[in-house]
Image (cartoon, rainbow, N blue to C red; front, side, top):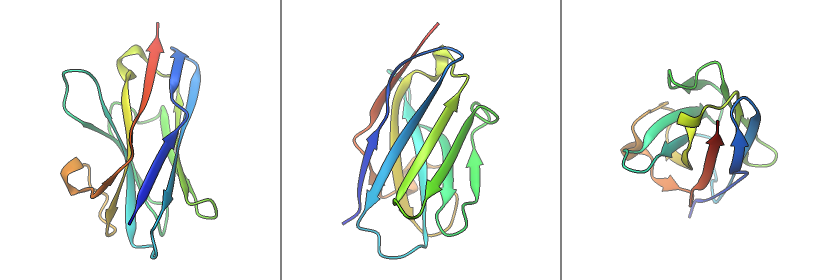
Amino acid sequence: QVHLVESGGGLVQAGDSMRLSCAISGRTFWWHTMGWFRQAPGNEREFVAAIRWYDGFTVYSDSVKGRFTISRDNAKNTIYLQMNSPKPEDTAVYYCSDKDGRDLSTNPSEYQYWGQGTQVTVSS
């Protein structure tokens, strides 16, 4: 059973930086893709970024491109979301997710596994 645990959320000032981590366990092969999504109150879950585990290829939403970076550490079975120059509109609960296969999907319904979420609040 795949298990995801996020960490690193909290309060950050606009223009500062924050890094989220997500540790994955239970995966026995490399053909999977991991992603970060976020959900603000009253909004649908929104794609942020995804990374293909076996080659590190990444994709980003337009709203975070150039500010956020997704990366992975194979040895630690962990992915990260480096959030630089966050804005108040980035405030949300951030979820780590995982799916079978190498398709860098932006659709949350295609991800089978989810973490518990971590709150990120960006103050102006």
